[in-house]
Structures are given as C-alpha cells and as structure tokens.
Amino acid sequence: MTRPLTPANQILGRLNWTWQDGALILLILAFAVIIVKTASQFSGAFHGNLIISTDISALPGYTAQTLLRMGIAYFLSLVFTLIYSYTAYRSRMAAVILIPLLDILQSIPVLSFLPGVVLALIALFPGQRIGIELASILLIFTGMTWNMTFSFYQSLQSIPRELLEAAQIYRLNLWQRFWTLELPAGVIGLVWNSVMSVAGGWFFLIAIESFTLGDKDFRLPGLGSYLGTAASKGDFKAIFWGLTVLIGVIVALDFFVWRPLIAWAEKFKLEMVESENSPQSWVLDILRRSPTLRTISDRVFRPLQTAVDHGMIRAFPVRPLPVNAQGNLHWPSFVNWIFASGFALIVLWGTWEAVLLLKNLSWDNWLQVVKGATFTALRVTVALILSLLWTVPVGVAIGRDRRLAQILQPIVQIAASVPATALFPVLLLGLTRIAGGLQIGAIALMMLGTMWYLLFNVIAGAQSIPSDLIEAAWVYKLSLLERWRTLILPAIFPYLITGIITAVGGAWNASIVSEYVTFQGKVISTSGLGSTISQATASGNFSLLLAATMVMSLLVVLTNRLVWRPLYRLAQEKYQLLI
Image 1: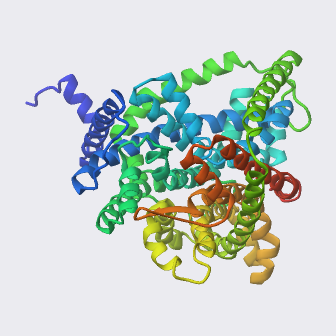
Image 2: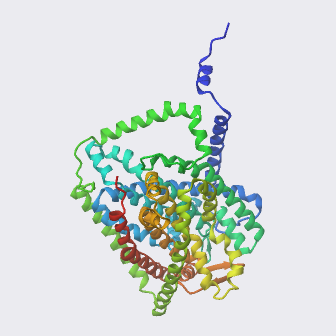
Image 3: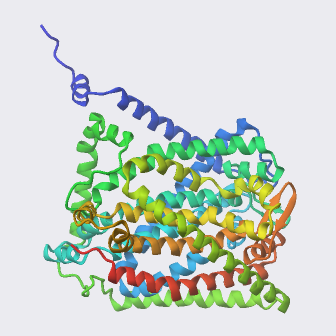
C-alpha cells in the first residue's frame, strides 16, 4: 500500500527539480546577499583621503562595489533609452527637440562635467559618501546611455512600413503596438549596444573612481580605482591581477548574461525562413528546460503579464489615435507648449551661467582651445578611418557566421571592456619611444575606446539580415563583390551610421584620457583639446574647462548635423527593409 502524497510532495513532484534548478536558486540567493552587503557600504561618511589598497585581498570587495555601480547605471540607462527614444519616435514635436538635444548630450565629454556633478552632489549630501556614489553612477550612466538610445531610436525608425500599416489595420492600441511591434523591432540592436555600452562604462571607470579636483581627492573603493592606483604607481603586478579579475568578470558576464540575451533576441529577427546560424547559449537552454522556472513562469509571471496587459489596454483603449501618416502622435498643443517652454528656460539659464564663466578667459586661452581642437580633430578623423577599415569586414563575419561568433564574440567583448587607461602604463613604454611619441600614440589610445562602437553595431546589423535574403543571394549566384554592394552594405548601413555617430563622440571623449596621462608620478601630454580639458580639471580652472567643453561639443554637433545626420536620413529612406 502506497502512502498518499502530502501537498508538499505533490508540489515537489510537479516541479521535478534537477540539480541545475538547485544551483540556480543558490546562485540567486548568493547574488542577493552580495548585493545587499555591498550596498550597505555605500552609506556612511565620506573620507577625502581614502587609501586604495593594491593588495590582491582587496580585489573581491572592490569588484563587488564596482559591479553594483555598473548594474544600477545600466538599469537607469535602459529605462532612459526606452522612454527617451519612444517619446522622440512617437511625437514629431518632441523629436525636433530631443534628437538634437541627444546630439549635444552625447557630445559633452563625461569627464568635463564630472567636477560639476561631484561638487553639486557633495553640496546636496555634505560629508556623506552617498553623494560621491551617486555622482559616479550618474557619470557611468552618461557613458552608457547615448549609444543605446541612438540604437533603439534608429530601430524604431527602421520598422517596415507594412508592419506599421498592419498595426493600424488590426487597431492595436498604444500599449499593444509598443509591446508586440516596436519593442521587438529594437531588441537585437539594443542587446548588442548594451554590450558596447557596458564596455564603455568600463572604459571611464578608472577616471570616475579615481577623480581628483585640484587638491581635493574624491576616490571611491572599486576595481577602477584599484587599477588607477596601480597604474599611477607603475605596479605591474597589481595591474596584472586587476586585469585578470576584470577579464574574469567580463567572461562571466558574457557567459551568464550577454550570450543568453543574444540567443534569446534571435527570435525577434524578421525573416521568412529559419536561420541556420542562430546564436546558441548553454545557460539559456538550461533556463528554458527548467521545470521549476517553467512552473514559476506559468503561475507568477504570465498571470502578472496578463494583468499588466489588461490594465494597459484599459488605460489606452482601442480608439483612433491622433497620428499622422508616419504613425507619429500629435500631442495636445498645451503639452507641446509646456515642453518647449521648459526647454527654452533651461537653455536661457545655462547660457547666462556660461557667459559669467567665459568672461574671465583671456585671448591666449581661446587660442589654446582652438589649436587643441584642430589637433584633436585630426586624430579623431584618422582613428575613425583606421577603425572602419577592420571593423566592417570583421563585424559582418562575426554577425553572419555562428561558429565564428561563438569563438570571437567573447574575445571581442573582453577586448572592448578592458579599460584602455589600465593598459596605458604598458602602452606608454613603447609609445613614448616611437617617432612622434604621444602625438601619434594618442590615436592608438583613442581607437581602443571607440572602434568597438563600430564593431558591435556592424555585428548587430549583420545579424539582423533576414536569412532568406542571404539564401536568395546564393541562389542567384551573386559574386562576393555584388553581395556586399547590393545586400550586406545596404543592410548594415543604418547600424553603421549609428555606430559612427557614437564612435565619433566616443573618440572626442577618449581624447581626454589619451592626450594627458599620468605615469609613475609624471604627466605625459600632447597638444589637443582633450589635454586642455584634463589640465583645466586638474588645476580647477572652470572657465577654461567650460570653453574647451563647449568647443568640443560644438564640433561634435556640427559634424553630426552636417555629415552623419544626412546619411542617417538616407539610411531610413533608401535602405529601410521592405516586406
């Protein structure tokens, strides 16, 4: 006679647990404990003369704090991307302001407004570490979000017109259209640009966690400050261990986060036949096969999603929306008026404050800024050309060949995420000895921080090419040159322009740490706008800092407006995918 199953046994029987389920639950609990324990260190008093240890025993705690900052900054970047891009996409009035504003925001160097942000938050939280923590998170956020925002906006603009017409025919409301059409259309580009954005956050991590202003020290314990301290001391042993831990973290993120997301995002690709080169992920396979997670999804997440869907449908009932032929919403006139008035007020206030600072500059200061802008512009141009020569063919190869992607994707992500500033001590040993020194070497250092924007966008563009078009090219026996001219280049063109826009802005940003380097207690610099900004920050010369930042932002915005934006419109009008 068998014993009847108790309710607990019945539940366990239905769940059919595996060792992977148990390991997953333990991993989630351990992760939660680490987050809570690390977050508790973010409060308390701020110590202005914090000693950063370069002992290997300090690395676990420093790494946990850095990862928490990066995680919070990425979450904020993702929320900002969805709201900002969608608002600009659905409202023509908002787009007129938000897209040029996005050009300006992404052109402002992160390290230029670092002093203002830090001082403002210190004043808001006097004597508290939370102010410096918020400043570091905000600045990591600004290093991540622009690339993601440009990518998602470009994806929304590239939705095939037939799908937009189908959404109108089936009378999808605002929420249904976003959830079933617009968000899926941008998932592939958003995932790949998330990888790049997180890599961009690592790039400026050392400068953000090891920030000094004049004689004031605002360092925070973290992996970036550890590498920065080791680099300034010339401690190659500490640099080796710091880079080893950083590479280990990047590999773990690739295996447990990015590779599953890339494989999951493949289902949103627009194609008529199933692709044979779809990315694979062992972690995603385990999650999909887990009976425990399937039960939790059926009993928790799906009912929750259904409730949210019903609530959003009630909030946005199916009725004719005030849209134009392109699907843009026409907001009420008073909303547009409030939006424009608030923007104008901010611009007027900022202009007045800028005039008060700039009136203290001499003519020699302005000549220094103009001369530096010329040298840096030449380096940015050369760095962009050299980056394009290798990122386009390599990106297409990775995006179209699954086996090659499995091998090269982790390597590329590691290379993109390793902060170039951590490699400066090694590179400087060779760069200072070659002809031209840092004047030429700065180009190589700028490329380390910018070429990845191009590569990851090209990979995303190559992966988004429908497999049936690739097969059609083979059926018609197009030559390699014809495939590139008629299919590959037109398909990746919108993604490539997005990558160029962010790469150029990143190159100007990278000039700040490429043209002014501290090595073994010595300052090595070369003429350039980035060097001027670094010198002004180190000396606390806010007038010169503002002038150099304004000139850099103006150059980036003018380049985007006169060169890249016309190409961006060409990509939307001529190279949009039609079905």
